[in-house]
Image (cartoon, rainbow, N blue to C red; front, side, top):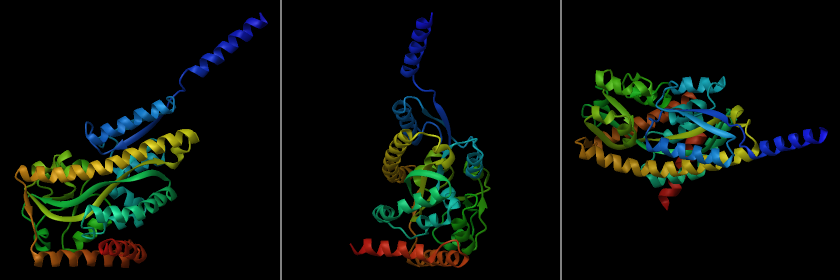
Length: 332
């Protein structure tokens, strides 16, 4: 009888060792609509993570903003209702204001300039997020944001006649518009299309591919062909949730998400080039400000940066760091 019990126990242990471990489900929120290329790539990464961790780590996505706006998502991460999120630059800037340096208006002219600056500063941004309790793996560029509008806009004076949308708590966008004499309309991302449909807003700022994915392009007629600022995002875990994974599982998650976001950044850039051409083919007019209007726009951008430095939102040292990197790159 005793020998039989030993055999049974041994058999149970053997079976337990061969069965996959019970998955810890990590709930991830994103504003990206389901069915997009972004979601497909993230689901593919989640499948690889689950397989490589022997089913110990499973990612469950909540796409399309169904978990609320980013402020709500971050609150839910704090209390453990969510474990991670794909956050836009607006949210990343709220986490740490030094992250505003990528959104300096009318500062970056080309993808190559932005790539060079990011090669020097991305790791600093990731370290700042970690300090605030968010584990990020890569910063993924969404591309340059442009002004898209129902009415023709080519300079500061035209903007004053518009109802311009800004994301909630986006200090940079708010300061820029208020400095231009515009009273912005703050709406969650999920309400922007309705705002355009009803006339609550007439003008938005977004990367072209973003505007197409969210159907904003169906409600506008013009695009101001000047890169306004750089948009970016990051996949983050709460530090508390990430620490629940074993070190080997963390290594798998970090590798897969890093590689996926690296790929996403490149895809986003290509998609934005194609999206811009697609907007033109659909009848959206590309507006080129003249020399006088560009002087006004550049002055506005410099005034905004100076004001934010004075108010303490931006650090002079961080801004100088960006300008020095751009100067080095442009000399090359």
